[in-house]
Image (cartoon, rainbow, N blue to C red; front, side):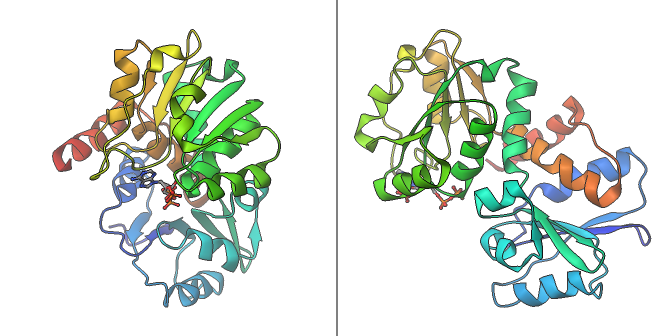
Amino acid sequence: MAETGPRAFITGHPVSHSRSPMIHGHWLQHYGIAGSYERAPATPEEFPAFVAALRDGSSGFVGGNVTIPHKEAAFALADQVDETGRLIGAVNTLWRDDGTVRATNTDAYGFAANLDAASPGWDRGRSATVLGAGGASRAVLYALIERGFAEIRLLNRTHGRARELADRFGSGVRPVPFADLQASLSGTDLFVNTTSLGMGDAPAPEIDFSVMAKGAVATDIVYVPLETPFLAMARRAGVMIVDGLGMLLHQAVPGFEIWFGRRPAVTAELRGLVERDVMGKS
Ligand code: ATR
């Protein structure tokens, strides 16, 4: 760990599983920047004091990342949240600015940048089917609306949460009953899974992805395993698939630039490094 230079953190409860130190550590080394990116676990009880110490400078950090379960608390505690963070209602990136704590959410950027890199033109369509209505779904909806998707079919096991997000994001987002998943794919240009469905005990429902529009793309927020049950089904139906690992890499870009002053590149080398780690542990 460098003794001098800007220090950034990843805080959460727990943070031991996070791959962010590997990503930022790679960039610090690659660009020869004297700085550090450190794990700084905080319980929910400790988190307000953690933010206060960032604000008054006593922690010595210039900023950092916030992960589960602090993203909503960070939104509430920050002094200035940008428009993206406000609409998503949760933030993952903090930085100290003139004695205040500023915040944004880079998940929407990471989601779109991953698709831009892996499947250029993915945003030419106008309709999308999104599964899930949690925090990750809010970032995805933000990105899709920004990219001009005018008809977003939103499905969630708990239908009320899909309705809440439709109210939050406006008339372009239409809540669709969970049981209508297959029908919701007809003619759609993009499928996004933001849930852990199919990873645990509950199997992913069998879906025929071939009903999607010509040139459609399917992607998943989950990246362990890289090819999730949904992506495997989509690939078998001849639909272009994009895994979620790139979102993890791209969402780290804006934070690194804010804390360390250099916009880093998401390279094949970085992806290989993180991919080997994911494969080793999955
Ligand atoms: P995140 O921030 O990762 O989105 P979250 O806010 O806990 O996490 O949301 C998890 C999402 O996965 C929700 O949409 C959840 O559905 P509910 O709102 O009905 O809970 C969905 N999910 C998790 N396990 C699921 C399962 N076995 N079947 C269907 N949906 C599931």
